[in-house]
Amino acid sequence: MALKFYRNFSSPIRALSFDLDDTLYYNEEVIHIAEQKQFEFLCRKIPDIKSAGIAPWLLLKHQSLSRNPSLKHDVTLWRKASIELGLAPYKINDLDRSKLIEQAFNVFYQARSNFQIEDKTFKVLDALKSKYPLVAVTNGNADINRLGLADYFVGYYRAGANGNKMKPHPDMLNMAANHLDVKLSSILHIGDNIKSDLKSAQNATTNSFWYNPAKEPMSVGASLPNAEYSDLDDLLQLL
Image 1 (cartoon, helix red, strand yellow):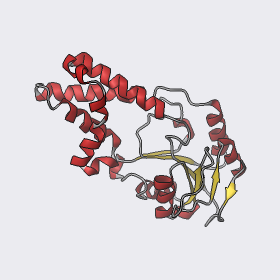
Image 2 (cartoon, rainbow, N blue to C red; image 1 turned 60 degrees about the vertical axis):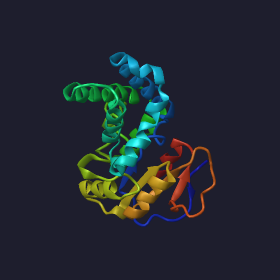
Image 3 (cartoon, rainbow, N blue to C red; image 1 turned 90 degrees about the vertical axis):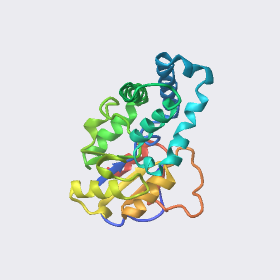
Image 4 (cartoon, rainbow, N blue to C red; image 1 turned 120 degrees about the vertical axis):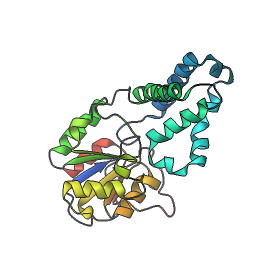
């Protein structure tokens, strides 16, 4: 569908802010693969881990977050804390434990960014950057260099870096506006998640577009975006 507008922009748009995961690419399957690779690595290092299977390891994120809710603001620290919690039952000296945590995280991190992005995504970003500076604003920790996205963005803001809290907190959009030297009302934030992306834009007083490929109805009480779209090509109407 074409852009479906709900309200006018609060100011002329001078910069675009993109969410990454599930906005510029889909990564649910990739995360499952990365979890499996991390588990297989740990099994090679500590064979006793294998007997219980991967299921207990998939629960560790919830368990570690219940112990330290602030971890939600940095998925890198959160994963490392989860790995550390999973290793707790095994007799390992502190030095080896720290080394193993880093190694297991790196296995996950490399697999997490090991996929191909559609050519259309690069073409749309290339067209948009000819008119607007683009920034990436994410609660995740994707390696945009490895994914081939780095050259399209003049800024990369992730939750946890520089003390930024995760969306829907406005921290990253505030920082982006400061670095770009533009008013928040001149930024258009684009993302798929109503609770994080649209709410973050509302909290930061930026404009927002909702990526809605499934064409789902707007939920009651949701932050109203300026518009919604279902295909990346729809954004070319901004040119």
